[in-house]
Image 1: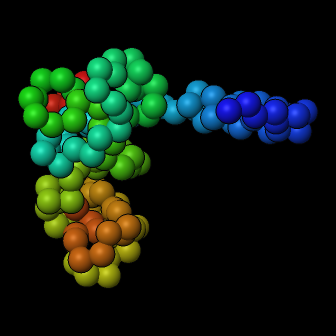
Image 2: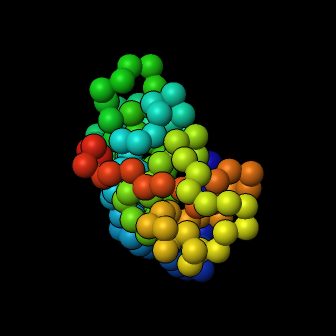
Length: 133
């Protein structure tokens, strides 16, 4: 099969390749807590078999090959304002009450995230000392 894209097709392909490379270059390595606080059985694959740790991190993903039978390159937990606030929803311990404001929560020295319904939005932080890659 011979496909002649012509100048417009070539230009479009080059533009798409550059956008893809720029997107990959913009990926940041997740924080240690975003990776180590995720239960290995809750990991969502972010790579391919044989991916290296460096390639995985360059995609903005986590890498941990210490657990067999689960993805080694996986999506991180959502970023929070503080590493102490990064945790799975199931690990949240309530620090407030329904309808608490972000300001009231912060005055209690707690974390606030209202992106997931029916879970504590104001919750106690966890020390980041146990976080690792």
